[in-house]
Amino acid sequence: MSARRVVVAGASGSIGRQALDVCRRERSRLRVVGLTVGRRWEELGDALREWRPAALAVAEPEDAARLRVEVERAAPGCRVLTGPDAAEALLSELDFDVCVNGIVGAAGLGVSLATLERGARLALANKESLVVGGPLVRAALARGGELVPVDSEHSAAFQCLQAGGAAQATRLVLTASGGALRDHPDWKRATPREVLAHPVWAMGPRITVDSALLLNKGFELIEAHWLFDLPWSRLEVWIHPQALIHALVEFHDGSLVAQAAVPDMRLPIQLALSWPERWSRAVEPPTAADLGRLSFAPVEPGRYPALELARRAGEAGGTAPAVLNAADEVAVGAFLEGGLALGDLPGVLERVLDAHQPQGVEGRAQLVEVDRWARAEARRCLQRV
Ligand code: MG
Image 1: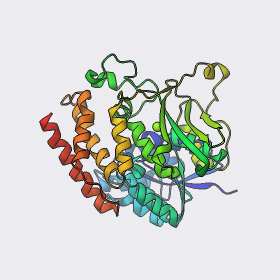
Image 2 (image 1 turned 90 degrees about the vertical axis):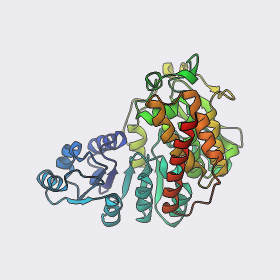
Image 3 (image 1 turned 180 degrees about the vertical axis):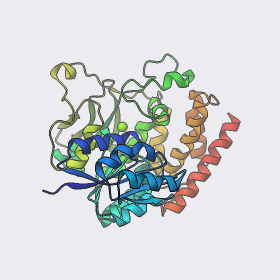
Image 4 (image 1 turned 45 degrees about the vertical axis):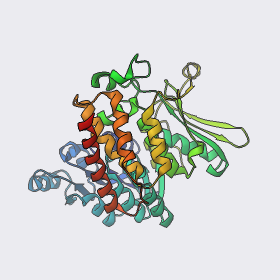
């Protein structure tokens, strides 16, 4: 079998770097043919020399002339594209089999759609693609391409659903470690420093704050709704502090199928590249002793208001999740700068959602407009807190 041709989008980020690690370890099966970054192309030096990709896209090069000179030195013949649409242009002209979308933020949606439009596999780690653009991604998938999720919970659910289709699933459970504030005596007064000390995953600041509020899990429910076409009544969250079981699917015969793995993103990244095959150990499997320590609990009602808001936005559908996502980015920024108490953050999101009349998602221009409105509305609400 010839090597799968891989594009790594968001190559300088956490998922991108781990995807490059997986490709390096599986050199006979994977070949990196394209890379995209937002700004930090200097960090790609080794990957450029190692893979000599056919093309590199840089959204915001500070010095485009120097970029071209240095890329030519590291990877002679590599085509350099620049500008906000460079990643999408790269995907439209390059021959590739899989794109790992590790872009952080709304720019990831364009990459997801461009990948599916080429009929390629989308190894999806970008949350906004489904949270904000779920209906657009579903429509693109109906025309072609393939989606294999990379987030640990969705990769787990995807694997559990091989045991029986979504139509036979009565419940899909995503697990949450409970974040840094699970045992905090008064989470509403937690400081940014306390929130940023996540017990399991090392992640960016916004997602770590979202995890402490279980809002990240709420966004993951929205993603699961679009990924697996499951109604909201069948989507649930359980608290599971050890983060070894990532998702469980209950089927209508009473069987409950779970996926367990140590929390290490290289496993779901590798699986999204190897599927339907499984390649040799990406990580060490959990032991009997590991599994013997597991505990689970339902989410205490009222304890995580932001999770409930995500469910409300997901059930409302249309542009509501995009509004929640944009408002949250503003509110988390205010919290990290010391301008908003954590306990007041869900209230800000709720007021923005209350002020929004959801519309059906029609296209990216509309989503950009909704995003802008929600950010402005969130800033207005912040002034009144
Ligand atoms: Mg996750």
